[in-house]
Image (cartoon, rainbow over all chains, first blue to last red; front, top):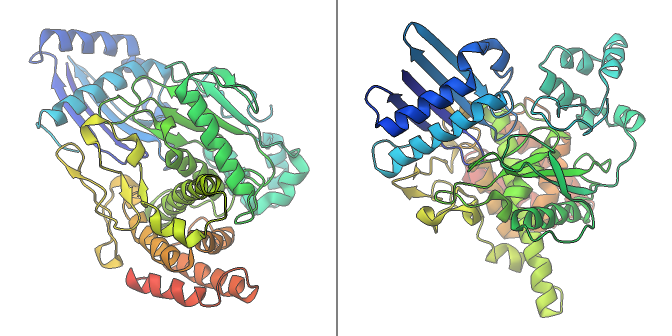
Length: 109
Length: 364
């Protein structure tokens, strides 16, 4: 499974990115990602239903998430208001991974 | 359905001040604002309906509130208004996030009521001030969603708890005041004005509280200019975590100088129109280009005092509109300065100070 993640905006206006492939990630991280993707039921989500209609509201975080798994692919854009509750644990973990990369000097905002 | 009645879901909480049927009636009656409003998303349909331009209608449909402060605990979920943990005049809870948020929102409400601005809550109609704390898990953000503010705990490394900071809380509530006045669109220059005015509220409320505290300690009144000149003019410095100690997110006196490190990179705010950001990121630079206007506010405040600068800016805000750009805001701010000077509500030379400030940032 391949994941491309980006969060941007917010009060601090920080852009975070994370790209990962569960085939090459450490087993513990890969397993957690697979479990969070499954529990989020992301492939059942409708792109249009979660897409924000207009820019704003002020200071919410905006997210872009693309996941490829076998022949399945989903690409979503959403924000803190339009994100379904089921996605939040996955978002939290992806943000942690992105911050960890920055701290290790692998990427920058 | 009425305001703030639905709890327990991200989606359900966006109930409205003005019931949909009232909007429909407004549209049928030919009110253009309502016509465009009902074509927009559910969320913005509601927020635009609350625009102060329709205060007359609001007064007829929304009973005057008591401007009570209500702090809710999201209990580390993403549910808004999950559990009311401290209402107006309730005792301390011993949860620092709850008690800090409660104090900061109260300070903000008291500042708005003060003679500088003279507002009865964000909508000037006594709406309750709702704040959610402990939102999400390690959530590194705070936002205003059209009805309430929401504060994350931070991850404890990059950011600490957002409820700790008065300027964060006042900034987010400032977005509320903007919504009920100019209601700027949240992109490009109008969006940067949204952020600018929110930063102004953030710093002004902080200075107002500092003035009260200093006066209490000194046992006498202290001149505004003294407070203005002592202020740090930093936004977000109080929420920086251990790895970013000493940094801030924005610097109103020196945009571009708030941070420079391996984690956040370099503060991208310009201090002059010649360096205005024109890219697509950040909704067209709403948090970036606000630096230009922030600098002009700072330059004005250090000459005439933060109280007078705030009065001028707020009077201009009331006359601005959703698509306004910087030049138009400058025009309204100068006009407000002249009118207030004429009424002896600001110094006689305030207009010239404002012009000089805008000249320094390339806007006059």
